[in-house]
Amino acid sequence: MTSSAKPLPDARPGDRPDARTEARRRSRRTATAIGSAVALAAASAGLWAATATTAQAAGLPTPDHVVVVVLENHAYSQVIGSSSAPYLNKTLAVGGATLTQSYGITHPSEPNYYALFSGSTQGTVDDSCVTVGGFRAPNLASELTAAGKTWASYNESLPSQGSTVCSSGKYAQKHNPWFGFGNVPVNTALTFAQFPSDYATLPNVSFVVPNLCSDMHDCSVGTGDTWIKNNLGAYAAWAQSHNSLLVVTFDEDNSLSGNRIPTLVYGAHVIPGSTSANRYNHYNVLRTLEDLAGASGHAGNAATVTDITGIWN
Image (cartoon, rainbow, N blue to C red; front, top):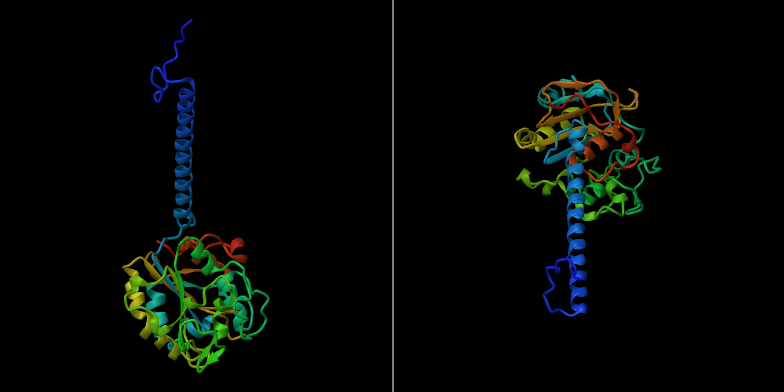
């Protein structure tokens, strides 16, 4: 009785049975490899699609660069509408968006910086010098790195890149929470002199921390307003036409206004002159930064709050 089965493509008439067996095995291995490759490609495509659409699903743009500036110890009413802050009011607020119900988490300064960076105060209750690398919790920088994005901070009056000194002149480490995390390289803390003039070379997300005078802590609202204009005004103008954003916020109020603080968003895809009266705090800002940049997750309390909405075109 003859078989109607055709020889396998790899087998030839006259092959020994062991050769035909090996041909079948090679054929099965090839099919398995092809199937695995197709499955891997499909899975990779799905992961890419999920990452790429995180911001869109939240109704957010996908900017190339976001620069966040943190100022100090002023209530909403001390800055918004103040004649002492013409740049913040007449340029950033008029041309960008104002969050009218934005709040710090607590007092004093340092826990708020941890909250904004990691979604938790990390148990800090004062402004003590941080234990370098003492925390391993997820944070904005570690999430960006995990997602293949870039991060840095630019710190005015920091003595040198990566310096972990507690204070130096007008520089205060308490405003730089990234030093507290062992999963954030200390060399990502740059001096403000290293802020690039070619803004296209900025990281995907960066924080700018002015010194104790420029941030309005020790000096006036007008001093801080002028510093922002002189040092970041050119970036803000560039951001509008280069798919980028500037966010200006405060760590806390003056302890007299329920911790209501100014928060402004300016740049591409922001509706000029828009406001949002939704109640937001540092955790909402962190979540929005994570989603804008396509970070790998949501740190701490950022996982349980909403993104900032109502200001995007």
